[in-house]
Amino acid sequence: MILPIHLYGSSVLRKISEPINKDKDEINEIVNNMFETMYNANGIGLSAPQVGINKRIIVVDATSMSNEFKELKDFKKIFINPIETEIKGNDYLFDEGCLSLPGIGEKVNRKSEICLEYLDENLSIKKECFKGIKARILMHEYDHLEGVLFIDHLSPIKRKMLKSKLKSIIKGKIKINYKTTKI
Ligand code: CO
Image 1 (cartoon, rainbow, N blue to C red):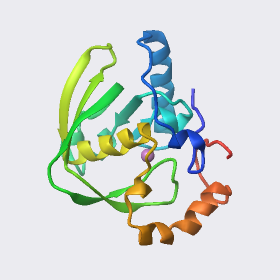
Image 2 (cartoon, protein in one colour):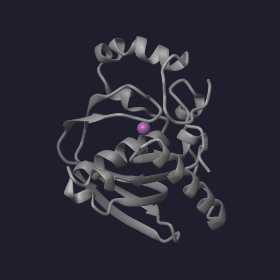
Image 3 (tube, helix red, strand yellow):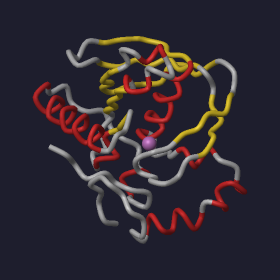
């Protein structure tokens, strides 16, 4: 089922998400809906709060970017109850966008590596570190579970420059070709 995506201004995007109970059926349903919703919106990553569920679930499928980034060839994954255990490497700028912030794309400064502890789709515990583009995608999605949006990482000047765009998202004045909530 395609779920409406919550846009900038929606309070669920600003809450810290709770761990989800290890109920396979419930998790499967949410994960399937999240993938369907993400594909429908041409996204490569989606976090549960973006579909109004304040639980710690992330889905990614960035295989469509594998022409540009070969390491993304098999990068389709589910992260249940992820916990960030380490962030390391060098800072670097990279373009980001977000289905909750349609029409906005900015270079964001982040570190190059993230280590996560999480449950996979079989609810087995995994510990894994990711580098480069994979780390970038996961840091963006992990932020959502902490109520953080990529624009929060921008300088005050940059954020000021986005003010009118953000206002038009809140007022529903932009055209979006996927299902969203009204604020
Ligand atoms: Co996002």
